[in-house]
Image (tube, rainbow, N blue to C red; front, side, top):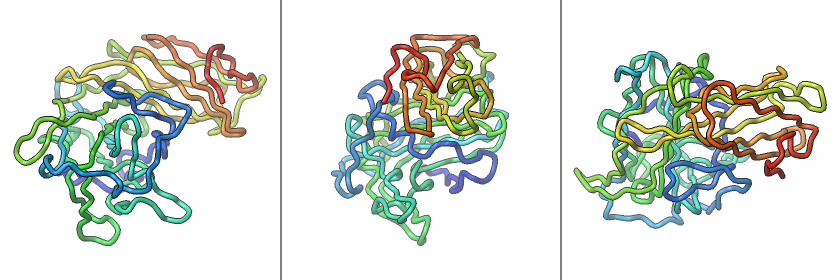
Amino acid sequence: MSRTAPKRHRHRGPAARPRRRRILSFLVLVAGSGFLALSGSSPAWAADTTQYAADPSRGNGVAVPFEGLVDRDGNPVSISGAVGVDLVLGSTQEPYLPCQNFNQATGAGDTYLNACQERGSYATYTRFAAGRSLLFPHGYFMGDSQPDLVRGGTLNTGWGSRTAGLSFEFYPQVDRDKEFVHSRFYIDAFGHRANGWTYSAWVGRITLATLNDPGTARIGGRITDGGSTPARDRVKFLIFGGEARSSSDYPISSFAVFTSTGEPTWDSGAMYAGPQRIAVTDTANGRQCVIDLKGISGRDNVLDLDLSRPDFGRAGSVCR
């Protein structure tokens, strides 16, 4: 749990609830890469947090020296937004995400589900108003105890001593979502002990980027179903990729999650330039194609899609 008392309801306030429930169910963590790569399979779910051993040598838990977001002049950004953090137990190769272990229908889930700020999603979700984006001036802390957000009191989760990884994802102001890069980074090594905590590599600050900044890209094109336009929300897009660096030179990447708008075109919004992996899902029949693009940059990257074709019109895509 961050020591900066994050807000608890991301469906209210400056950052609306992102279109994201089980992003990591499409992902397999790649060891040492600093990002999550798309896969057609789900992570290996275990039964519960309690199945994972703790490392008592970590002291109070783990910490990430990440302060927040800044503009190009090094000042807090002029928009509102939020930072969501996924907690990963187990290992990078076989991840278990306790806060995503939630059955909406039954209300059942991980033993420590009540410590999750977003059931079925992020462990913490910290919103900020314009000019308040330096969320963690002393770093982000995942301790061994968290508030019980349902019953009150404290839950001794042991999450800090059990943490295998932490995935940070930035959501910009909802009404300006497509203008800004959604930055993300992944931490899976904690090796420096100080002040009762065990720290990761220094991440520092992330500069908020738009398509007007160098090192960015946008992908888009036409989307049809045998000549007709797919209905609003019928098609889901999940994009991960690009390459950038934080103020301390830590590797970061970008992501985008959105659905079709009912228009005959689609648009990723701002991404970091570099290789991209795109998962396109037709919710009408469950078909999904994963498309890899080599390093791209600039605004004019065209990818036309046709849902009526076996490969969605993109030869070489991997479909199921």
